[in-house]
Each structure stands twice: as C-alpha cells, then as structure tokens.
Picture 1 (cartoon, chains in turn orange, blue):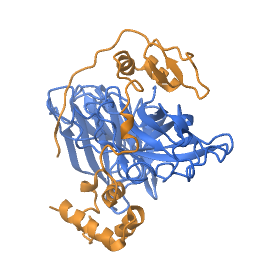
Picture 2: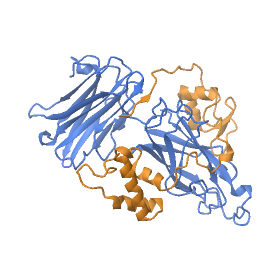
Picture 3: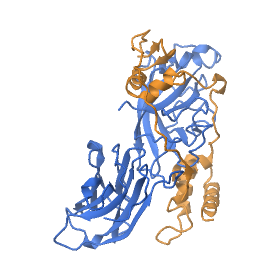
Picture 4: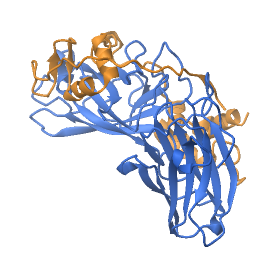
Length: 146
Length: 320
C-alpha cells in the first residue's frame, strides 16, 4: 500500500463574477480577447470563468489558462524524456503495470507469462526487434517480481 | 451492518469489496453496499449501491450509484476466468465527493459519479433475495486515508484534486503556420477499458481552404497515481501522448514521446495542465494541417514563417 501526504483543507469561495464578456475582439475561430484577464480565451474558458470559482480566481490572480505560457524556446521538446521502448512498455501495460497480473513471472492461473506475445506488441509499437523487446520485458518482469 | 465505525473522522471514505458465489447467484438478484451510514441501525442513513444480476449467460452485473445521473449505471461482465465467484466493489469518498462502484476484474468500466456519500462511518452489505440462499466471501473494507495520509488510491490525483472523467483540451497561443489551430477544442474522456487510467480524445486540426476538411489527431492522457504530491510540479503524474502518429513528428521523441505538463504554468486547483509548445513545422510534410501547396514550398523555403509555428494544449475540466 502506498501512502502519500494529503491535506484536509477546504477551498475558499470567491465572491465576484467573471468579467469577460466573450465578444471582445472576437476572431473567426471563436477566440476572443479578455480585456480584464489580458489573455485570449475560448468560449469554453469563458464558461469555466463564469461557472467555476477556482478558475475565475486563477484568472483574477494572473495564473489562469492562457495567461502564462511555457517558454517558446522549449518548442518541440519533451518535459521529461519518455520516448523509446520503455515508454511503450509502460503504455502497453498501463500505469499500474506493477500490479498487472501478467507483469509477473507467473499469471494468476500459475502459468508462465507469454513473453513472446508482449514482445511482438512492444516490437511493433516500440520499433525494435522482437529479441530486444523480449529482453526488456524479461528485465521488467525480474524487477517487478523483486 | 458493521457496528464498528471504520474511523472517527468524517473526511474519510471507504473502499470495500465482497465476493458473491456464482453457484448461489440467480437472475435479477440484487446485492447492496450501504456506505457512509451515520447509524448502523439505519441503512437509509447512507448511500445504497445496487448490484443487479441482469444476465446469467454471460453473467452480467448492473451497478447503480443513486443520484449519479445517466452514466451512473453500468453493466459489466465479471472476469470469465473466475467461474466460482464475482466480486463487487465500491469506493465512496466524502472528501472529493465522488463514488466509483462496479465489479472487480471486469472488462468494462465501473460506474463513476459525482455523488457525495456523506461523512458517515458505518458500512454494510445486503440483498433482496428471500427465496434462496446467498453466500458471500472475503468481505473487505478499508478507510481511504488517515488524517495525514492517503492510503488507497481510487482516483487519479493532481496534488489534492481529483479530476472527473470528462475533460476538455484547448489549443491556444498558436503562431504562424499553426495559427489556424487556435481555439480547436475536443473532449478528453476517461477510458478504463485498457486496464489503465487514461483519458482519450480526437482533435480535428483544420486544413486550409485548398484542401478543406480536417486532420484527425488522436491523444491519450495517462495518469499515474504515484508521485502525485510534488508541490513544485503540479500534474507531474500526467503524461500526454499523440497516439495515431499524425502531426507530431517534429517534436522531441517524434510521435512516440510522452509529454508532461509544464511545471511552472500547470495547476491542479483549478485543474489546468499546460502542454507544449508543440511544433507544426515545414519538415512534417505528411501533416496537412494549416498547409496547402499554394503556401511557400517547405522544401525550398523551410525557414519561411508560413511553414513553421507552434502551439500549446491546455487540458481543463468541463463546465459541469
């Protein structure tokens, strides 16, 4: 069982209304310039501003969607490198891969895992050879069974 | 009904499960979990989750969370490899105001509803079958958290927030060639069927007037319940993937890389995960979004601003 820290605090509720109208500098694709929050918004974001206090508060405080952007210098880059066969193994088996029934040397029926089946999948999606895929899966199984 | 409360603090919640023997299961049997009850003598003081047998071949269980709307009733086929019993499960969380209930190891997603079960601390099981014997096995119940720790994950967390199963993605602040993507929005909907927690959706990137129509670009947002308490990186346990290999190759990792939300601009309260900037460049000839043959030739004029641009994707809650 994994425990993580948590808090029990309740959120304060803002008292004011969203000041974006939705027709300011309206563009053909539906975006408009919200003068009071100094950012471009879609009508979905305007509805969040109107109906969800937490979003409205974020825009009022200057850190709502569209108000601050990651630097353009990062264009095309990954925030964390997840490419390669490992990423595909993770995608195939899912985030809960450590608990996945087939991600152990034996499945729940007591049969040995069909590594070849998953190696084929990993090879196809990870664009690596099947032997390399099988090797990676066996390493993962060994780690998972420790 | 258990006469011992699961805990004495009401910001808690339950995760509970019990197995029902198949050999004692008949058509239209109903089984119940009574959760978050205030009084152990009064099942109506909590929420009653109903598990109804609607088919015996294949065995199919209909789970209903009361007050949860149309999608709070689902039908599930239990794990066919376990022929002897099926297991009903519920996670009722007063703190986040949500309930998830269904059959363990089923192929289809459980019911998931924004229903606050209340702060009661008693739980019980029940049935409506008076004409035949009922047999249960392995009754298990746990509290979801103590006053300081989260002990059982029923949800995908973003710090202390729990997004619901419907989200919306928005492209914004797109530049140059990518400018036509501004305001493109699409639904990201939870899909349990893959066996992992992920939200999926398809964006329609517009082509320009020469081609007309749209390019379908598919996305999946994966949630990892671990590493969800990093205050310096809200949304760290979420990863966005392009899943159909379209209009993504110029980005690092090609179309196979996972993209994590920006640490500085993403927030969990409100839920707003910011991804990008993503390239829409001259080198990606296979992507016809925002590009036509009458535009500057990307092969001979790759630096022309009309051939290159970037954009951001922000994923938020839906309005209701």
